Length: 464
Image 1 (cartoon, one colour):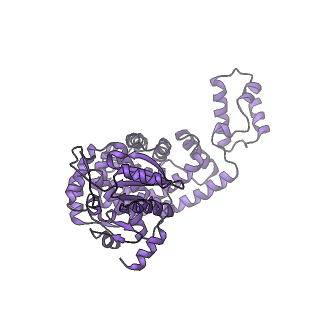
Image 2 (image 1 turned 90 degrees about the vertical axis):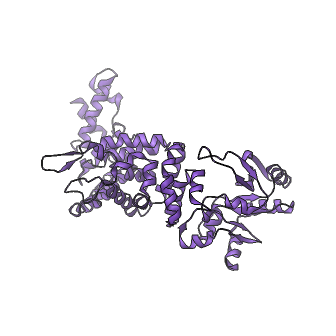
Image 3 (image 1 turned 120 degrees about the vertical axis):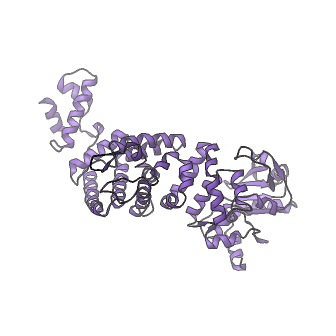
């Protein structure tokens, strides 16, 4: 590393982290900044949470930091970790350690504290994460992580298979880092990664969900599907049947897997890399049920009747298993359910689309309407060449949607200018299901454009 880069990192190291390092070293201990902050700082990316590793046992770390006026929480003392809080910023501070065997493929059977930071770095997953930095001593990089970072290579520290057998979740972490850093995976690491992918079955589902969500958040799910499908399918077995599944349809030039990868790429392209979490999950899972819904007619053409409904059920099941937040799961399932919903560039059609989204995911129709159009647009360009023109038609539908929303679109009973009390008074009926039936009929009339969303007009309709 050049002296200029080391000086830049020293300037960029947050003062709250410097205070922790300084307090420990003033007390005669060694301390380094490690992990994500070092990696991202070398790339010139915004600061990551700062972690510190030290030669001090955690008890001494806590004592020294408290004596320096720093708030300390004993968050992981079994692993030598305490969390220092300086000016509201947490700094995880951990004693140098090495780890024993991982019988459960997730947690070390034992942790042994050591005095050499190099031993601590040797236990880490990938070379790009096995670097330490000190504002005066500079970069400590015993495994050439800086070189791999510059070359955009994800390489396991030491023997790859051992790293993945220690913690099977690392196979997904490798894919996430490759996506996040726009990197390739070293060949030996790749071989071990594929061999160990089935061990994900032993990992807690919510941890898998966190890593998958991280992969989708990079915007490079298409790369992961094309280059690391063995890992993706091990994480979500429902994806496995998509590989090589010939759709036998004039509307599709690709198997279900490649089509899905293209849709994942499309939602990033059409949103400028800003696709919502729900849209990214929907792109991944929108055709997940096609293989189970496939049928072939007498001419040899394939059909997938009911796959949006089946796909929405599968999406909900997968995302619930992976502990993806409920609001994201509901929104993604709604998009999967409606990705083949027929729409036209007319105001009534836009209202019907909003109404269906409201029914599928209450309260989210306005936001999801644009996601649905982007999903449909991506779906169109991922089909056969003759289908791509539909993406242009969707531009017209987007303009129609914007115009309808600006005009005060009505798509649920709560949007009507009248309410249940008006129905009871004007129709002379008792409170109950009948009131809802009248309001539903009125809503359909307004959505079809036969009646304006005007109170007097709707009261007149009720009196009729």
